[in-house]
Length: 368
Image (cartoon, rainbow, N blue to C red; front, side, top):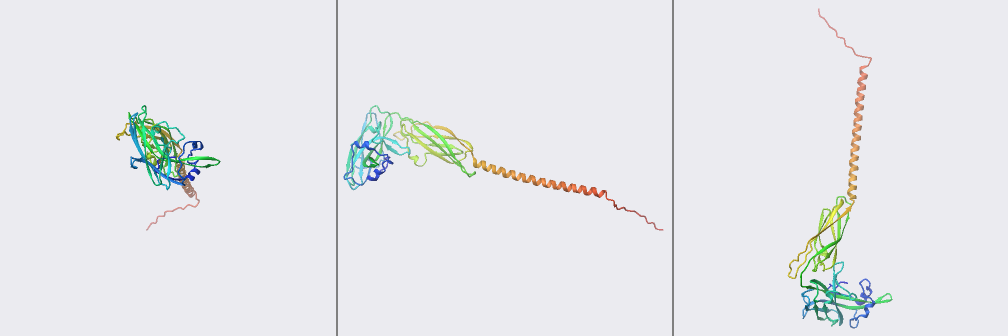
């Protein structure tokens, strides 16, 4: 479950009943120390945000830059909006992005191997009803840490329990925020593209384009956070990416991010190339761009244009029908003309052979 929401309201019994759908922490985790809300309140609402020594501040995440072997102390605030005093468990773990692009941190059942192990903080904190407690934590970078960006999360959680059939399960409901530690040294921004494929949904209206869909994975090969960007071209159409919620996502070093880009006005007539041009970016601590080589990969899409072929077949049949009709009409007219000429010839021949011929006699009259 993701932890980037600032607050959460979840009745404990309802959380237990939704254990399977919400990635439960199963029975073996019950052996771990558990922090329970005092007097088992039925509704707990809380938030966990970055803070200074006195109060929550405006930061949504904590970003820090440290040399290998160095350490620093920062703070966060746990606010309890409930009507009862609550004891929250506190934990830090490696951070990552889910397939949907949201930030999350490893559950307590998985061992952190990177920045999650660099953070030291109390195991729990008790917050009075409608109160806020400021908690200090320390980040210590190992002497041999690799330069670049390392992501972790800090969360405050409450365990609830319930029955899953005949088994008892525990659900760890967490609220937290992201901590990004940049270890000083040379920053390298690099990526590559994998699993490029395309498909085409044609429109059954032969005069309307279809939708070309390109899917691909971007893998961050560098040591700094990459902001994805680029253009997909195909079928006489193009589309920039990311779009929508994808535009809010960054790619951590070593992470893979899947993209689906639709080109809604594409024409694919039997075959079309599909090109993905990736122009991601990265920045140093001063906001200056870190050089990153552009990428370009290509695949192709096959699609039989049945609507257009059907329309062409219909037009061809119509033209053929008109042509045949005109030819038949011309043949009928020619036949009628030939018949008329033949009848005229026969009539003329019969006139020359008639037995009654009119003869004219010329008489000359003389006067005395």
